[in-house]
Image (cartoon, rainbow, N blue to C red; front, side):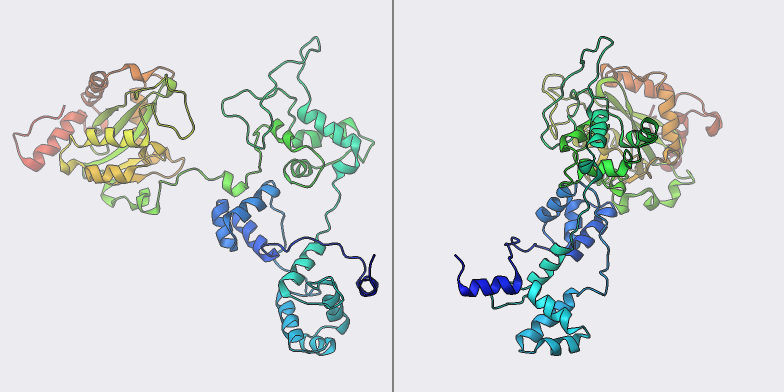
Length: 464
């Protein structure tokens, strides 16, 4: 039973249940975090920009379902700011009264009195005021979430759920298709069965509602509201596992700026094509190469190297690694197809070092990860590597044209691993012995031989 002092406290402040512990970060920290996320950076980098730890940033991102809460960057002047609360705490600790604090801050005395009473750090009769706790109380009370439409409208919620997760039936009404994996809060299974459902998109559901319920205005909802009901934790309208019914099957929403990015971490500013020597552009000096992969069936491939000036072609044999087809594929496991990063660099180095040093000036590659260890390759060969811009095949036009010629010998949809190093060398020799109009009807082998003789004089061995 409450004593006299506790009763006076309740009469003065009302019954105050414990709101829990203060947050680890403030509103402006979340604003900085989501502003960084909107630029497309990773959660670790966004956490660093916000000044919070990575686990805190991941928790914010997961609880929001990847959906930006669109927090305002500024707070209305009618509310006390964090700086003003710091001044209140300092002046209060110096013994100043409510009216004096209000006069110095330019606020009404009732505002200061209410702040000291409502946002105190203690729940006893003697009120202690701390800036951090007061700011936390303010941000906690400012949350006034609107009840989701799918929560209060059961008919609308059932309509949405049936079109998201409705069963697929055959002509006889029998449910067909696999059940799919159990929901574990993760993305769709990689190369595994998914449950067969109706899988209408939120936009299809939102646009179909006016057609099915033309006279019922309560049966209306936007596609964004459906997405937020699926992704945002705490909305409480739709089950989280229904995200598996979406086409992407993502457990968390991916920010738009991040989804536009590609995994090209190996391409740094110093290896962009804009940094390539200018002499490579006019093709006047031989020794600048373009490279790529010709992909075949079951992840088989052949590497291609084409010299820009003479159109001389070299093919790189990429045999399967030991264990291919026997060892099950594992995420981040060994690259057994033959063109993993290290294997590719070593195979290219073995091929390119057959050339004299004068013909090793630069190599331009596309954005493929097979050459992500380009630094290792450059150390081995002394040949600097540059990467073309995304979706810009014309920057490697010679190589793209040569790959088209090679498709006569290595068609798409065929297993390229069946060809030996001798076989592909014979194909390369065939291309190098074709006369080219751009070379004045010389062959690439003859053009390269003329260049070598101009450097070393007569008596240099042929390269074909």
